[in-house]
Length: 295
Image (tube, rainbow, N blue to C red; front, side, top):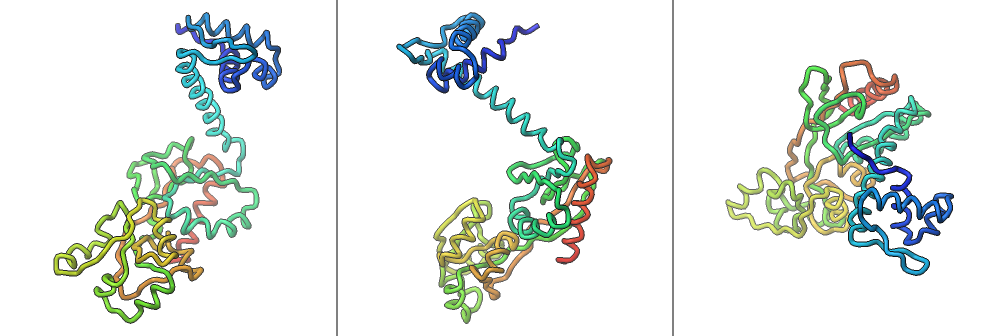
């Protein structure tokens, strides 16, 4: 059986290390200074190491204490994160949606007001920075992704076909309006996505045929491409979902003479088993209904 450190002593150690004082740690934790000191002594006995140097009214970490403080801080953060992870389950009207960033910013956010009007008690947990490879109904309610989860217990429905569109600022669009393709690509610099260094699937062949183009910026963040286009920095080729809000507001314009092309299909996915809460099925049906209206 593993011998674990006393949890209260770990909390006292973390507070003392962070505040540099047993007195301030005691005040934060509503304990006496002697109680903090006793708990630190317990922890030092458990580790077999001196963790603090007593210096006047304050304390500083020893070399061993600094190393151990990193471990303790990480452990406490993990425990807090674990609590946050299960928080949605306290609300029966919560929905955990993992989705592609372009779907979140370009499709979901412009419609969230409509959804919350129809479901006033709903609470969304929107996660865009992780890829999901399975749905277990514990951590995931719904998924919108270009990567279909092709397992027997997951229902996958295609909801939209993404396409790329060439955009630029209004002044650049006016200047290039009468320039045909592909010459238009030589009259303004290109704003490129790091994940698509060729900018467009047909551009490499045009370059081999003698077309001379210039890239002015490359980034992995499509939002920055749209922002750069708004600032008249050049022509960006981005997902229509990422560009949707800027196009609708007139901050950028599409160049119709530059061919668009299809990107990946987006899929809406959920478990085939009963949903964690009825609201999950309601949101699933709402997304399908809205996508059908958009089609």
